[in-house]
Length: 310
Image 1: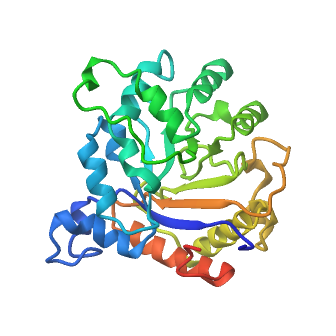
Image 2 (image 1 turned 90 degrees about the vertical axis):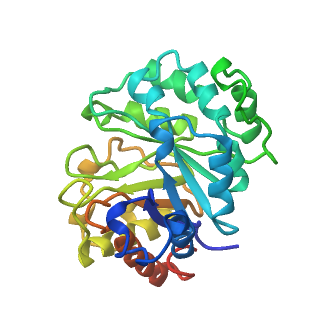
């Protein structure tokens, strides 16, 4: 058995006009971009699911375009997080789950639930939502069966197997910086997204048996790249997490992991290993794929394996 969890480093989205001729070969057909990116990385975050309900055929196409062992993280619907703000969302969640996400089958990775910047911490509202989230594909299919008539002719409710589901939440309001929030996530075994951004809280608390990182840009949101020093620090943090530890356990200078970046002083239960998912979202200047490749090499050197995807 490996001495560390699986580390998957990839990109957030893959359809960007500015990437053509830079990351993607100039003559590559647009319909081949996902397959090309999947040859470089072992995970990609699907963002289109945030804006609208997709169709089962789209999920099936994405699954077939990626190789065996590939994982697609799926961003949750903004109708649930931004418009309904987690209130009265059972039917919208059923619709979302019925829209075809289960067609990804074993390639279905974590769900990302991103909260808006003006959405503050409310224990009861969040607790109700986290309780509702399905922990397996069978549970997801049962909830998806509650979809309304809008999905009547296009629902997909038949997963090929019973796979475990993982969920992660990304916060953007300072009221979440509280031990109560961390405790709630740990009780539900939901990961707190470590979001590297200059605009919103960046927390390093471990709340589940996996980590979910979104690297938005070290200095400018969605645009700035990462220096060699910054990538070294993230690589050491990832190695520490993958080996069951915390970022504060990694052998880098103490300045790299300020204690203020923890909402709770309580440490998580010890584990031998944790899986780590990392997505670069600094896509505006075509930095994401190249920063992801550079981080892969650094993690590989620390943990062994292939390109950090161990």
